[in-house]
Length: 257
Ligand SMILES: Nc1ncnc2c1ncn2[C@@H]1O[C@H](COP(=O)(O)OP(=O)(O)OP(=O)(O)O)[C@@H](O)[C@H]1O
Ligand SMILES: [Mg+2]
Image 1 (cartoon, rainbow, N blue to C red):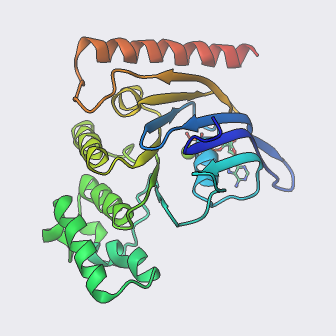
Image 2 (image 1 turned 45 degrees about the vertical axis):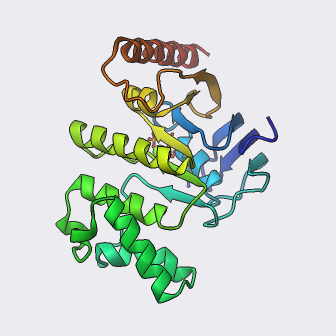
């Protein structure tokens, strides 16, 4: 619906390298209410990152309608984007990585110190503040990336396969942690993943994208995903298996089409 926090209608994105133009997205319709957790899942190359880049305001070269809280996407502002490789600056310490966005926004030294300390504490990173990214584990690096996004108090958190390089246990820890943050802040989350269990654990609404050029093939209301840590229960596995069979069916559909 048009008054949803996130509203996308008939989105189309073409890339036009000289020799081989690519239609990355076609007729994408999607909406998500404020404070909800949406997860987008789909095969490699179907256009997921293209979509999230549009939402993050990094690509304005699209047609159709894209509204966040009634306005076209803007770089920065109320939206934070976390990428697969975490996007940390290797030559800056944890502290400097986290305060970068605040400095950019010309906050006072006192405000910067208070905000960074509070977020680093919440994420259990305060004792690592003077380390460099190379001196951290993958999970710690991921938490720094989340800290860097949260310190700016975003209303919308966009994540492009943020946990894919983590081992299974660390990944689950960070997923739990993301839910805790969501419970505290009730910010709107839109996350891309290849991982079915992750989609079912985190997504209140799961959007399935078809093969390139991507469009939303199906939207699933996922009642299993709530903040009560359902992982491992029968209902959870049933939902995973439902989603898995759906993804298989849509990939056959795409191959046949
Ligand atoms: N800058 C670009 N120039 C030309 N083609 C591009 C560009 N960026 C992406 N594409 C193409 O657009 C399509 C969608 O790419 P995108 O990165 O959005 O896919 P994805 O769903 O995120 O894939 P993955 O799951 O592998 O990350 C692909 O065919 C890709 O090759
Ligand atoms: Mg991608």
